[in-house]
Image (cartoon, rainbow, N blue to C red; front, side, top):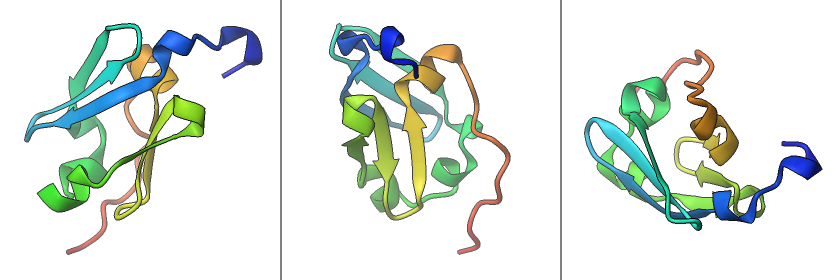
Length: 90
């Protein structure tokens, strides 16, 4: 994200996961919802791993430490699925 593109309203407020959807509430009141199949690491994570997330990247990212997954609000707003990477074997 370029410095001139920073929008404080695009910071993460909250994250919700279901079996099918990742939804991210933004500070400006918007909610981004995307299919969880876009993110294989989240798709194959346990409910406990999915629930263990932290806001990162100065408020513009989400990090799941148990599965080493990072997403940005910029990418979610662009509708960008994760780059293909193998999910861990359980």
